Length: 414
Image (cartoon, rainbow, N blue to C red):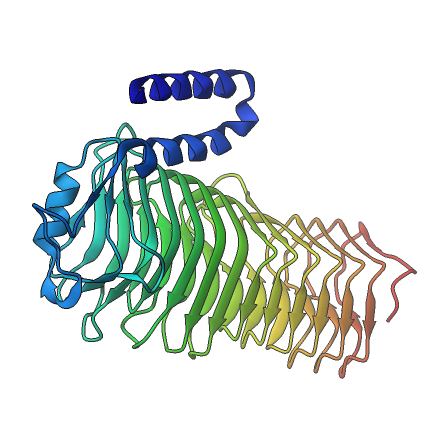
């Protein structure tokens, strides 16, 4: 019966992928979930014989859990009932396996000092994939430093959901991953050495691509680098991101090193150094970034700081009570329908040598310097229309550009 179900599932997946390619990503999620389902295959319980994990927060349960992972069929599942499982070495996952618990806070994996990753999966190529980790808290011991929660390399079609991370240097470190799905992730950090960064990168000259993040909540009450960093990542979709950083040096989302095809929607970033920061891109063609419906509040330096090498759309959203609202340092940028309110510096600034941009239908009010600034030396071909820039302390609009093909419409309200 199980073989028949698997055969019919794979047949359906093949048919849908061929004739309805736009639904391929959804099909992969469904296929992964079914193939790793403990209802279909049964799950190994690490508390039962012959594994006998204690789950009491005192005993070292590494050997028991690793033995269960090694013994599980593939596809298959390993179940960690409620309890705290201390481990002193890295757990090594294998393909087509689901590792799950009884929920966040109920099932806890705790690393002793010196453990460099809770769950480490290294594949020699994209041919080995389909792992799922869910329904547990992954944390380091308070004295452990530079610990990674989950690490994968050259792995595809993985699913991480309903997880909490605490006291780790990296929550997830995805290196050259393909079709990675993250949902309902919570991060709570302690200590300056445990920054809780989500890192998506590629270290082998390729890209991490087709990454979907839906629901990622992180609170950083310390000094650290960034909450989320994308480096050589493409086709990344982020929805429902919530970042709160009460520390002094935490950036919200950093996009760098030839990353492209990034979408950030319906998210909030509060009390960071920079809300969204792009570092200059070295690729031959610009990478595009969409920032839609994002609220950045109390960013001490920039709400959004955009460097050269990207095509960027900022649509809607609010940028409030920080240093400077939106800083444009790249060509082919559109800022449409945003609200920039209560900044201690300027509202929207276009830097020198920037061309082909549109600033339209924005509300720029109550900022301590100028509302909208177009710097001297700004390039040609830009449109500024339909904006309301009012009640800004040192002027509502400043245009020092000398380009011959600029248009500042009469429908702006200064």
